[in-house]
Length: 218
Image 1 (tube, rainbow, N blue to C red):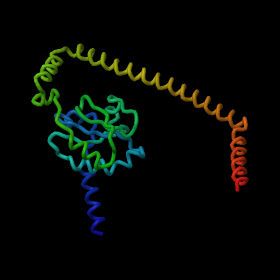
Image 2: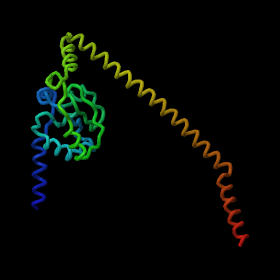
Image 3: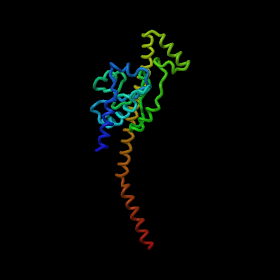
Image 4: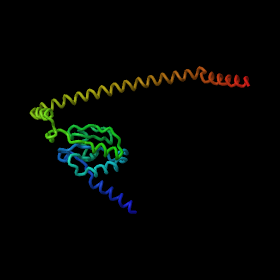
């Protein structure tokens, strides 16, 4: 009974300390933080499976000075964030600078998540200039000096490079899939032809002859 009560208290604490980000509070809550964010859909089975681990992780890092572990509901109040970031599957986990998130590719068990989150470091950014070296400060200063239009144009130019790389990748993968299917069909046809030619019967006869030869030697 006591263990059940303790488990319920832990679960309650995790829920109470959960951080769910929306379009309205994203900037305020992520400012100056290195983030570790799970983008999810309430109906997603995998999301439900990892919810206890993620809730415990959020509770453990609640109030951390430099690290924010949070949720974004892509079907609810966080939909616009997910659309802007380009979330396509659930759950998607990202980390790093809130304005330049990177995909998390690690394991999704609690211990692996804890280890990864513990190693997240504050990052050089416009809101953390004190963490930048001279080169980083100069780069940020040069970008800050650009007009909004010029900065948007540079961002769009690099976004286009990524989009083109994605497009090329998807086209090449599609071609590889077609080639794989062609080779798979050829293999199946070759195997079928060999079997039809009496390959199995040859093996059976060979085994019978070997068995007979062994009997004759006795």
